[in-house]
Image (tube, rainbow, N blue to C red; front, side, top):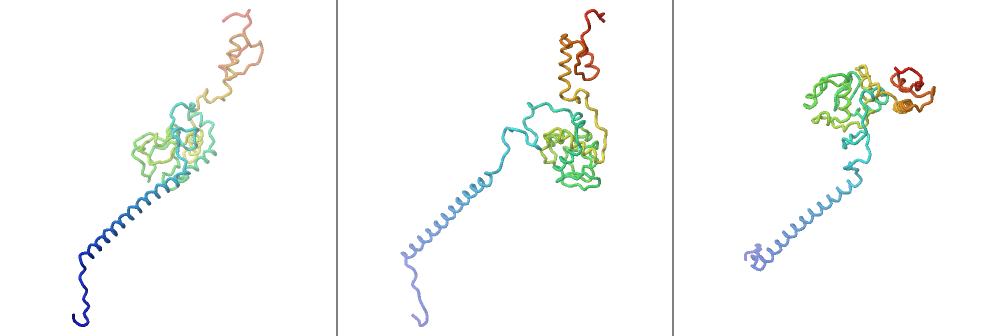
Amino acid sequence: MRAGLLLTRAPSGRQEQIFGAFMDDRNNTIAGWALFSGIVALGLGSLSAHYFRSDKIERPEKMGYEIEGVVSSEGEGGATEEGIEVRLAKADAAKGEGVFKKCQSCHTVDQGGANGIGPNLFGTVGKTIASHAGFAFSDDLKGKGGSWDWANLDAWLKSPKGFAPGTKMTFAGLADGQDRANLILFLNTKGSNLPLPAAPAAAAAAPGAAAPADAGAGEAATGAAPVGAATPVDGPAKADATAAPVPSGAAKQ
């Protein structure tokens, strides 16, 4: 051995076996810890998802009652809704302005207002559907044709997806028919000012007026009403039905 030179002896076969076993155990340990960490991460992810969703209310399969602003999925079976003409006859533009607050995050309504997520709605009533300048409407809505008349606006506001399935509008719709009529009346005051459609006379009558008149007509027909007794009437057509019985000696027409 030369001076200043440190010589090391090569490892024996036994030492190599021990070192190799150590490295195998180390690799197995690392792999085991990596697998364990993955299982723990997966479990924590599942637990956290259940925790954060535990207080989230999801829409039930069958609604117990209608929620304002959400269109019913029941379809049929509910009460028959009055026509838009009848609802417009008793609509309130001030209430419609309140309903419009649900639309303000996407729309402006004043003249010259900018387009937002949705188009500016000034002068919408009576306007050609999907014709507002500077806004990219969906192909489904552009393909509808026609104008935003009373009936089309009512159908659109009730269910945008039902009116034009490919629409970009994500609002679910207004389930309350009178809310829709109030909103349409408010929109009509913003640049359109179209005359309201005539409501059918029978449908526009007060709900409680028909029943007393019909009852009076039944009494007159059977002769039960005393002569000269006052009976409720509802217009000329029902006046004949509620007239006092003709005396037996009178000439028959």
